[in-house]
Picture 1: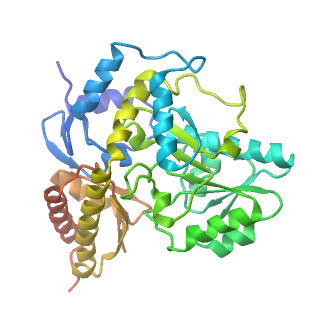
Picture 2 (picture 1 turned 90 degrees about the horizontal axis):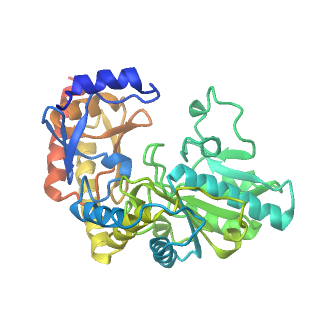
Length: 404
């Protein structure tokens, strides 16, 4: 017999770590943008597993791919080759213009590999002492010790100090501040194309061209964390193409597995060559089951018509959010983002609005205190966006009634 929501929560509080503030919902089924809780209440999901479920929940084609491969071969370890792994590597390197791929199990792991790769490349080329990585304030790169050390949010460091040494932080979007931070100890720059956890912050159009030029001038590696922005989220296959630059190292996750744990680090020939046999690996990464699923997912995401559709619905969604700026001038400051990675900036806490939407059957995420983040499945349509906008308008009126 299935458990009720309250029974699931009670058992979870007894048995799970309390390291996450979970909403009082327990989901049991999904289909596209729709989720149903244990009591059968329906929700429209504009969180998408935090920009992960590109094709929504329980896509039938993915289930079929998993079932077929599960009946053939699950795991053999990286001691051996397997066809799905090399086919996925070929697909991703061709699409990105980078040369080599490493597969792991999460975006944080991919960032760990990128950090190690950058430092090892610099060590091989210049010897010790040139190991510092410049990252951005307000950034987020994951929860492992290396990834959190590269994350520019001191509140996330508290209690886990000392952080891994060798990182310095500059304001995101400020190319001049970054240039001033470069000294002989610096080997790389690590940035998100759009800061997600930081509040859906899009840098000025000339920022990444300036950063790229600086890296070339100083001989620094440019690492782009595309765990959230990559694979269609911003309307392009990879967000770096929106800015006309090319990284030396790029990390992927989230949509790479659409809920199945997969991460990837892609790199140009030079830095990729720094990780020689024995220098870095993973037991589970590159397993046939994960690779076969990801190969199907990525092939569909990279389709030109699919990407064009994400750009169209992303613009429609952003235009709808923009109308709220004028309708609620006391509360709504701005709408911003790229593709289907969007944020509505409020002058007041965003959490109560997200809660009001949840009661109405809409799932959104409040981040950076005052920002509502919308990262729905890439298959969202105009009708679903319209329903969300209607619910959002009602929630803003209820939570923050106009003065006077």
